[in-house]
Image (cartoon, rainbow over all chains, first blue to last red; front, side):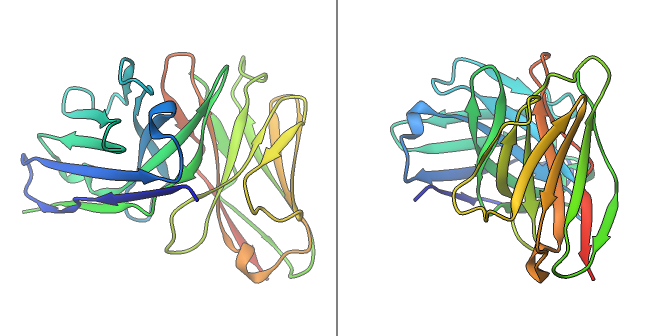
Length: 120
Length: 112
């Protein structure tokens, strides 16, 4: 059974930093591309970042580029999102998501999410 | 960069059928999309991948009551024999050639 379990969320002050993690199991993590997707309170889903299976290709939404860094450790079956210079508008549930790709790209499994709150 | 447009809300009666629409912006009518369901207070759940041909592949455990179809730039999710736990937000998703993920604004489905 595919499982994605996020952790590391919490309350952080504006301008601060936080790293959220995702522990993957039930599939060959090193063979899959991964996304981070977030959802602000009462709002829709927003794609945040992508990383290829090897970590060699990385993309970001314009809203987080230069502040967030996605990474992975295939030996530990783990995905990370380092978030710096956090703003109130970054407050959201952050979901780790497994990606199916080819001539397309979509999420086929979601984690349960971890809440990040940016507030003084 | 494709834009996905969804109606903000829809409603249908228990036991009936409903067809939700996701419309791709001009020039992107060939794009594959995915449909996701998000029940209140829960994480999203993948429902299906849907191609421009109307061919679809559902995720593990998705009931037969869920089906997909396409017409031009429109991608449809049809739910038949509506159940109370189908009341949820439904999102479509695609990927832009500029290497950015895209989600529609979501449709809130109410089961009457």
